[in-house]
Each structure stands twice: as C-alpha cells, then as structure tokens.
Image 1 (cartoon, one colour):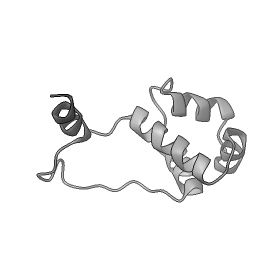
Image 2 (cartoon, one colour):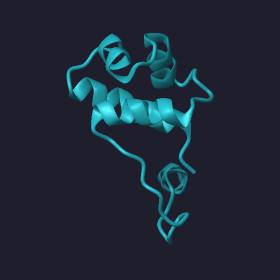
Image 3 (cartoon, one colour):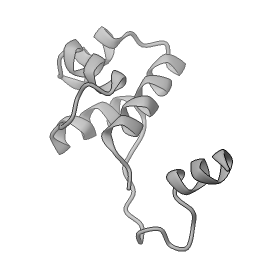
Image 4 (cartoon, one colour):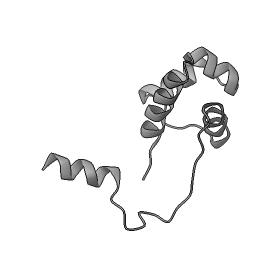
Length: 84
C-alpha cells in the first residue's frame, strides 16, 4: 500500500529535479509551504485528495489505480528481501 511518506519523498525528488523551491511549488499548487515541507519530511499524516492532485499536477505526476499487488512484489516485499 502506498503511503503519504512515499508520496512525499517522490514529490521532493520531482520538485528538486524541476528546480522548484518549496515556496514555488506551494504557490503554483495553491497550498502552503508548510504543507509542502510537512509532506516531504513525512510530518504530514493526512492530506486531502484535491491538495495532493494539485501538487502532483504542478510536478507533471499523476496517480494510477491498478489491481492491488497484481502479482508484483510491493516496496515492502523488496525491502524485506534486500534485508535478508
């Protein structure tokens, strides 16, 4: 299951790759810089769908729905395998 921490980490990577500051991303997505900071650092536990979508849209990202697991290992599965 994808959690907000993983989404926040990806947002940080994409924001930096695009050369945007947290303030610029906040302005463009009509959220606060504090929200962006909390999201990227994992301090944000909940965030509304519309806010997430606004942030992802600015970064050129989207969410995709697929069948759960679809026979593929999850990130957690891969991490456990690596740690063995």
